[in-house]
Image (tube, rainbow, N blue to C red; front, side):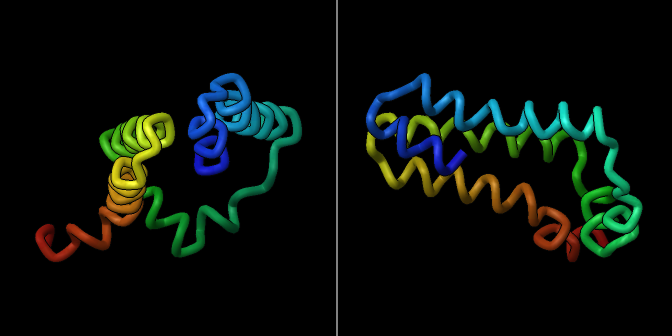
Amino acid sequence: MLPALYFLWDHRIVPAAMIAFVPPVLVSAAMMKWTPDLEGLKRSALGRYVQTHMTPAVEVARLVSLIPMAYGGWVHSFGYIALGLLILAMAWCNGLIFRRWMI
């Protein structure tokens, strides 16, 4: 998403959308055609963290974080971009942030 903000800043929505959405679709299609062996990643510490803490609610928070970032790019506001990045960081780090309250 961050590279797409450059084009949103200039109000060029088509290149921004292409940069934001085409690469994930291409990678997903490639992974369906040529299935990679991800067992090593699944057994790693990061894989266990994602499996435990990447709940549907966290996935929604990651998606929602794109809204203030895109809006901030459009209206030239670093504050909104920072807010989106903060939401994204909190979503990814939720297992670290809320671990002490879950014990």
